[in-house]
Image 1 (cartoon, rainbow, N blue to C red):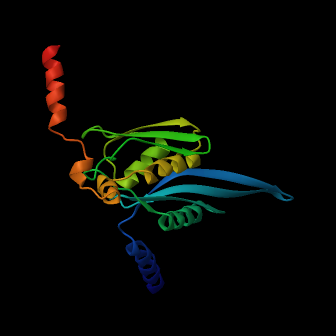
Image 2 (image 1 turned 135 degrees about the vertical axis):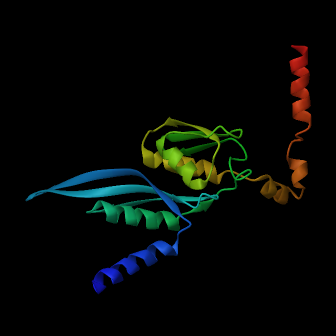
Image 3 (image 1 turned 120 degrees about the vertical axis):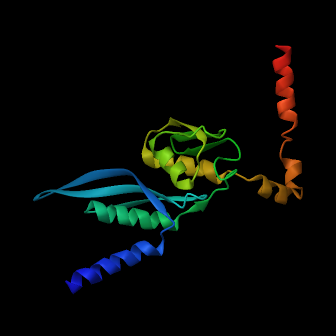
Length: 193
């Protein structure tokens, strides 16, 4: 009985080290190797990890058993995390394209309440990143590895107005478009029609 308690405590400590990270299994692939005595099966896992506050990473792991492959992929994903600036903590600052090999993705900002409009692997990345409103489209390769790499490629290109202003030596207000002018123009167009 004491042995079970120790085992339980050991596993709990591993989980408590990083409770702020959530992970999502995107794909699991069974591969076989034919040998003299028959076939040997292995598993490859693709996992996306994020803190849902602007950090995300992905990893892949291979092992003879599924849980071990997932564990390896999760550890690799935690080591390869990137930080992405979010507007209002819910969407992207600007539209962008990402590319990796034959995988191409388009990501656009969206108004509040839109939700995550994205396909499988891209959806996992946005959910783990903490994005609540985004419109995206995968063009090209449907391979989940290439789609995730293309998505992360696009996200690394994103720049916040604060970083752009700092680089140019200006204020953030000088960089952002005036919000008062845009509604006034649209109301004039509506009155003329």
